[in-house]
Length: 203
Image (cartoon, rainbow, N blue to C red; front, side, top):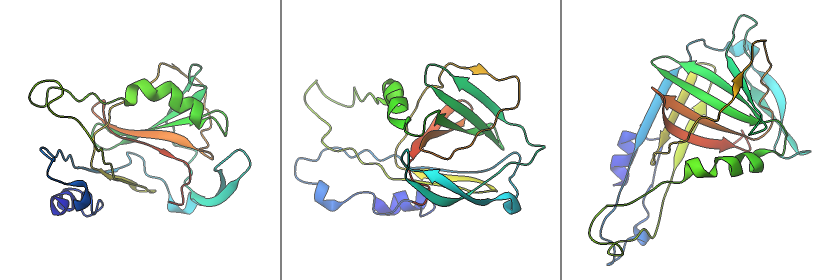
């Protein structure tokens, strides 16, 4: 199982299943591997990348490499009053894009996650037998996401779908500075295949 996951994710996900989780009561094991690699439609120049502060908390900052767009680059940004957040969509070659959901407040991630809880709930039903015959006793997830000036590479052992919040698009240029914790997701043809959050870009 682990060899298959490693192969399907280009060796980005390793040791997915621990043998200690398996016992005589185990009946079914569901494994879903997914790998994605795409180049930005408009790549970022490496020479524009510079060190900036990222605020892990309201006052605790760490210095990290931060990509910056060129003056000629324009991306879709919208404001969500309901989420108290700003959204940025970066197009990827081939009907794909990466969306960043940035709280307006440095410590606003918890509020944002509370607003998104309904869309993160997976529903598992109808696997086999009658109700109560089988039950889920463990859920595992391993993910890998690498964002660079060239594009984005991601791998995971799960599939998560979330909905895009309702918001109004801005008509004037707006800065998007992701210098504190945020949520992101990658979508292909409007189907979300990866979702996660960044609380410390160093890891």
